[in-house]
Every structure is written in C-alpha cells, then in structure tokens.
Image (cartoon, rainbow, N blue to C red; front, side, top):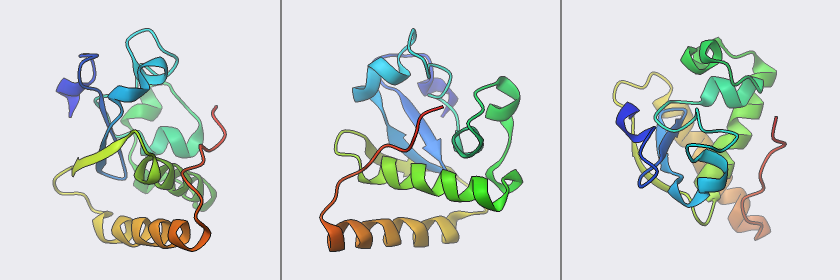
Length: 124
C-alpha cells in the first residue's frame, strides 16, 4: 500500500484494511492537499480520532475507543458508498476483517433502504 502514497496518478488508502482508490479526490489527497499524508496508509485510527500526526497514522484500529470506533465506521461507510472512490482490495492478515465485512453490509443495506448516498463525516 505504501507505494501508492506519493504517486498522484494512483492514490490508495485503507480504512479497516479495505483499500480504496481515492485518485479522484486529488483536491483532498493529492501531494499538496490537506490530507496528503493519508494515501499509502491505513488511516482508520486517524479518521476515528481526528488526528493526522505521524504517530496517529501508525496506530492500529484496535487502539480506538468505542466512540472513536463508531466514527471510523462512519468513514468506512463513506468510502464504501462513495460514487468516485472505488474499493480495490484489502490488506492481508487483517484481524478485523470479519467485523468490517459486517459493517460494510450494514451500510449498504441502510443505503438501499433510505436511497441516500455517501455522506462525508465531519472533517477534522
């Protein structure tokens, strides 16, 4: 995943081990953008806590509190349901895989029930 953090031609990031192509979001994730440090990493902890420091970008989702986990799940829904960010794969050996799959299924079912698209959670 790291190799897709600095090439603006292909920007990938991961949330709960699910990898999304965010190249269409250059204004958010490109080399000079506000969240330029996200591509090439799993950003679950950063999104759940609102922290963009290198230290937070190195932490695991397993370190999130219950409230922070809920916020990270909102971001997972955002990326999964976004019409321009596509799911392209998953990280290997992800300990949260089964739980995360359940959350994605719940988000898709909610979208089908309500007809609503992806709503971006409050940015930090």
